[in-house]
Length: 89
Image (cartoon, rainbow, N blue to C red; front, top):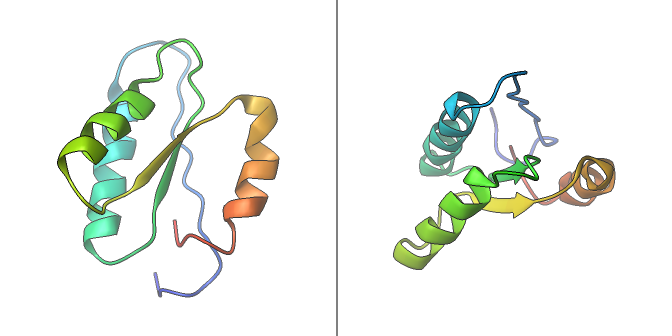
């Protein structure tokens, strides 16, 4: 991925609960941010909010890295439209 190109969207989802998709998303986000990309993780799990909680803990300990936003499914389209020019991934 080349910095400055249109934002890429990666979606990780599954039917059953668990942390696989959250752990994978957070690890991918950290790796991309370490490569210098502007990254945001959107947490759509309104019951658990595991990624959002991880983002809060990480922000308290570490500068930089991926941003994490908690949102509902209804908020996703306008949120992605707003982020499209601000983020790489």
